[in-house]
Length: 538
Image (tube, rainbow, N blue to C red; front, side, top):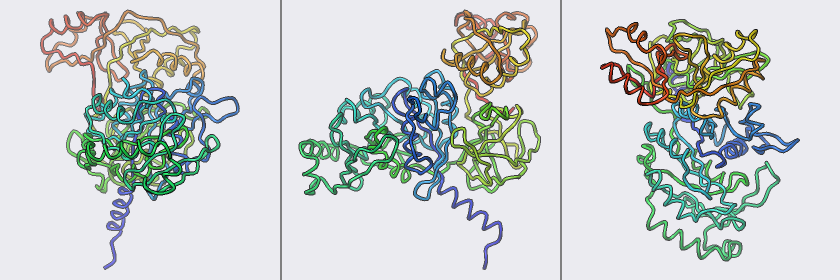
């Protein structure tokens, strides 16, 4: 009996879900995250020449670093979305900001992935930013695969790196490859899964290099090439086999165990082994929680949520792109979706996929895919799209900023452009905008100081607004949650100088000291002051 159209569509949906892998790369700044991103794209065939991050004149800049300030400073400050094919799978890679000042963007991006690749500088071990990001992964039980990078430079001993990771991150390690030498004598890796030695030959910068497989450690060719390192590697591997925990899929998927790889992203050493194993181990799209129920990816009706907004990816069109993680069902170009927060239906004809700033119109998308929906400010972070069901996905966070600056406009005639620029840039989520209950000041709050530089640069470059920032004595931000029946007007009258509204219209308390915030809380039993707020489509 032939399949019905519905059965055929469901079969396609199941097949496409099975071949999706959606993941993010996280690291401490300068651990090699953007370089790793480039090399994965290189091995996946998405690009043919990997660009150096801190590009010299006439060299390519990194594909994922597309903002002017990123190219200028050699850092990533915005999440880039890239899609490529490898071994019959579709990999959706989200390259997140490594800089601590932009951790909010990274935290929200982690809500949209099913696995994480953690890059660690082998000369330094686990660093502060890595620990913070890993805590977010742990809360969401996101599986993590680890790459010990920069083995071609002076590095900690491999066993020391494993011990450091287990102690600092409280995860058990399961090595999948092992380095052959290190520093200037780093030759390649031993693949513990198939027991082969893989040596790498130098390649022209930015290109894939040649790999020679020597067989097992006992082979004549291995003894001939590895030479003085053979005895040490053999001893270390024997020690690993007796002391390390074997790979356990259940513990890995719960975020309790991490497979570990060694190599050099810059020189492509160990990257292919990592990518091959990642395709085998990383899970396909997983179920997602909403306030009402759990959404399974195999459900036929489309659902998705917004985890990021980016303005002016195309300067010529002054556009705003909402990045939507597809959670269930299939997206088809031209289909009508319900924007749950507004209750309005939207015919989506020009959704797009990305390779950093390069884009193409998407005809179809499936769970795990990231699509961009152009809009003019009507879509917000955490908004839900569906085929009609009033769902609201959970877990998209907003964090209290720690630094505050007052905006100073140098040309009073550009108030309108300033308002537009601040609103659009801050709605992307890397910084937050506040207005006092009384007064007309624009206050920007951020986790780190670099965000103010980025905003100032973008106001000038994208909105033709010359503005600066001046410091404030504010240090504490709390979102105010009033109990039912509470007299809001009386509360606002009593604490006017401390109260502001954020970009979503929520009431906030901004004070100089935590003591002041605690005092207000003590004087008003039942009033909750929160340092985080879950963004939702209410």
